[in-house]
Image 1 (cartoon, rainbow, N blue to C red):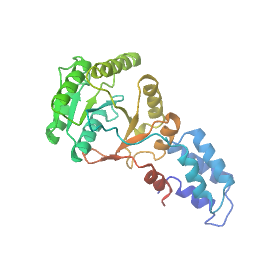
Image 2 (cartoon, one colour):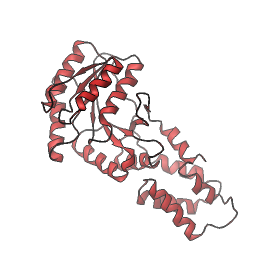
Image 3 (cartoon, rainbow, N blue to C red):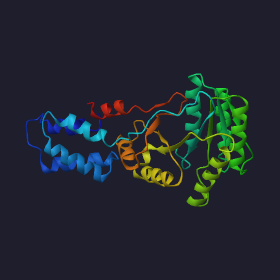
Image 4 (cartoon, rainbow, N blue to C red):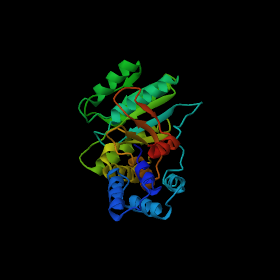
Length: 282
């Protein structure tokens, strides 16, 4: 059932009865549990109380559309040079898997992709990306565990340029001793890459099931690195449907891709119109 279908049914008065205070509280609780955030839910409930009747769906759609980012959801692309994408985020969000899935999507569209395994601090991250690379028949540039991530990224950029690749996708570290350590490391990786080629995108991976914590992560990364877009993972039956709305409203960063499963094909561009429509489907 769509996130707002129950609310709309109540407001339209399918039962012909007035909505009680307890009904409003129940609806409010359900929306909060869907990770819309308390402030957002309060606004929706107030709007619903004012707009009772046939206008409720269009009014809600208009209000919710205003929450979404107006920035482009298209992945950067350059016809005359390498396009470089850094994938960032905390460990456990599906960052390395998302890196591989994005590479698979671009590869299927005919782009030549090189991967750089610059998450050298996490055990098995390099091996994980190399396994994906072998499966997808893509070049993976790697280095020693606990080695210098910036060095791996630099070598990846050099290899991608040498092979005339369309895209370089760099999987970065997701955890160091402190937040400042991590952000400093990401900054260093970017600076080193840009000695050879511009960084066109910084995509932040956020786990949809972490709710408000995911929003906090997005704010921290946005403050420290120039995030251009989001990859929202685990947006499946177990995820709360409102997180996409809440995170874009709070950060103004566009969701560019969503991951819905473990397979290479469980990854797609985020369509805001389709997403909104789904929130109202019974």
